[in-house]
Image (tube, rainbow, N blue to C red; front, side):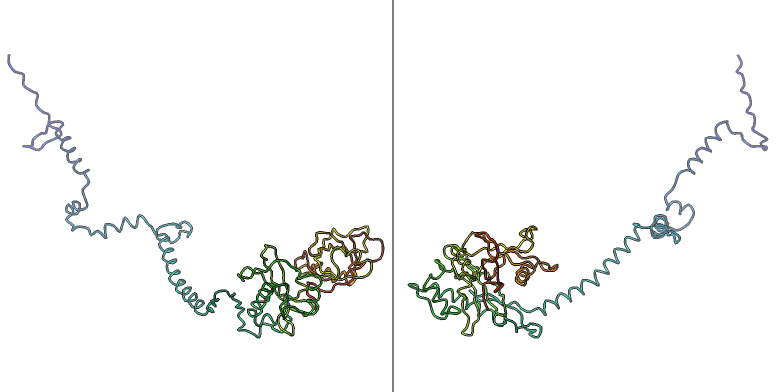
Length: 368
């Protein structure tokens, strides 16, 4: 059987004479290889070699990237760029520059202030430091009733403690000389009624004292408060008399013209001077009796309550209210004010614990 011959390949289009035909499918495979080769992305170096150019520098490579990451827009608002890297770096540099300028100036000012400060005065052992800095004497008034203490406070403070030590060392009830103000009066009362205290003053540590300087009617005085050996408290008054520093025995003991127990009978016979602590509150006054201004009178060493009144609006009432800063919008109202007053029975019907305040003698327990 004879083989059947294959049909001749029909040329695609008009081939020139002597040309060779290509099988179907061969042309597409070649085109595919060429297309895949063209799609392959080369590195910048390969692309440069293909194009016949030299290698691209790194700075030139990075420039397009940086420009694409941080585009500059002059027309963009400031708030839109807030927090971007360039703005944050600029703010940090400004803060560092500000600190670099401010810190040295503050250091110079601090050093100048510390150099010009007065050095602290070191107190010796057993002494207190009364450094009042009296360099500017023109601005410090030393002409009042307290000037004797303000001119040399340490000397008078130590002198007051020395008087307490001398009283502690007294034996057999014998009173040392030159310790009391109005000595003749004080010695007479001590001879009749005793010293006025039963326990010694504790003076070993002067830091335990509380001291105050005050004045009444142009009489300045020093107040020392502390503890006795039996742990009871004391309040002693010291006045700079013409003879020197002295203790005011009457003020220190709360002396009055009559004992507390005899006050009710004594005012029936006449006026009596007492040292007391006064208190005033608005509710003490009664709308029923608007002619009287009432005060609570507390006598030293007694828990008995005595009520004293002064005619409303009288000079005595105004003087007493002034002690408590009544009617003042600037000063704080005071309570439990010490005073020396003169009391009497008064007119009208009064109870046994009620007296009339006739006169205010002093705003503290020291008389002029």
